[in-house]
Picture 1 (tube, rainbow, N blue to C red):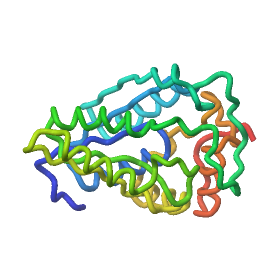
Picture 2 (cartoon, rainbow, N blue to C red):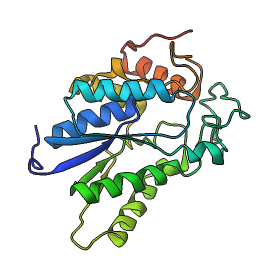
Picture 3 (tube, rainbow, N blue to C red):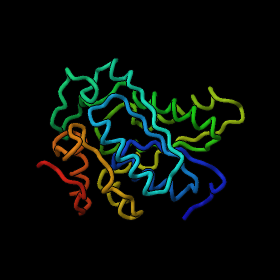
Length: 228
């Protein structure tokens, strides 16, 4: 276990989904002290994701938690996750189009909150479970977005602030993320990825489809239950 950062704290953005769950497991390997940040934004499965966040935090014994809302993103709309007038469509994994589930510039809003908390708590890193390689193709999940935002942090914080954005799974496929999660003993059974449902995962939305394909290609059975 790499504990080169034992005297430091890292903030981990935890939505409650599989990617952030595995990212939390990686962060635990690298930092002894973790603080978990959960940000809701008026999404359809807000309550279920919050439960997953707290379950994952309980699993890792993380007591330092911040749960905040940026529900103004729902008022802005433009996404099927927040706008009742836009349907959550079934996945088309062969499409190059950005799906309707994209929440415009959401990650910038979340990173701004994480940076504020990191500056106050003197955390040295912000972990984000963004995936670029085998994902929905959201523009704010690209590596260059996070590289640019890290420069913004350096420019816009106090001179003695040194916060790194860590995206350890950004270049992994979903299958590789699943394998990494099992390797680290991540509590994937506690995670929730579905965009539509809060009881049984629908299995057909973009997030469910990517997750299921990842498990199939990894040769593992997904521990959560689906309608399909």
